[in-house]
Length: 405
Image (cartoon, rainbow, N blue to C red; front, side):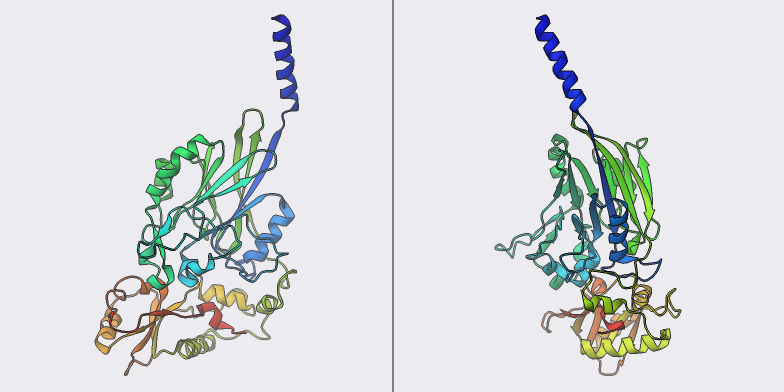
């Protein structure tokens, strides 16, 4: 017995001596806008990549909002997990996920009953597996009212399930796993309510904002974090994996501001480098607005269009094309081409639509461009006559029209 007890003691001592803590770094960015190195206000994807590579290149990277470079070279680092947002669905639809090698994830997505042969193109969760044992489980959610914010042609065949129910259904599995669960909250959600309702989740990610923040919960044992929009700030999360206890400890999060990269960042395709090239002279807001409206109506083959009200002031970096794109369109947008009659159009124009204005010729107007986020909801959705041609999305976005290649 004594020898057995001594052997066990020696074994435990050896195990303790061989155990070592595993340090992990997690980077969280949001709404990086694809590229957008337009100065300090919008370092964009290249700025975030440069920051991560300089600080802790071995860390895991989560990007929320779905800001991607679809034609980026293989040499350019991509996030370890991508969580799409409403802007991506409003401008690209689910086609961006089909046959995509990128690590998208969304928990509350299914298929509409009228598409029985379709498959969900987005896995419900992503697991980040460290070679020394620790694993992280990342989940993303879309808001319950997504169908009212994304026109049906851009959302089909996806069905958005209630986000709270979707998380409740997987909660028992998360509790039984040693993985660290990380939840990206749906846009428009009440972060405080979610963190109270789901105390088993140690790390909540809020949608990106101009005001990045780290909010400790339960004396720092849990966190809500909010990355800076357009790549302006990332959240660095540090934690430790205890290889003996098989648990995570020392969770800590902090805001790190991102500097803009060089105007000609390396490893980008030539067309993207051209997109970053400074203008020979700064245009005036009025001239740029007039050119934008002309291109929109011509390329959209429309008589009238509803557009976001554009700023009359120049951006902080008026010779940078990306600075104009971010300044005039903080959220990129596509339009739906709707065929309507004069009476319906008059009803639409009478509605109060804050932050938007009508442009074009009203006389005899029948082909109308409606921003995709508005086209999915009343009054436009209710005013569509099913006997007319279906509304179709434009193949371009607002930012595409400002400085066409």
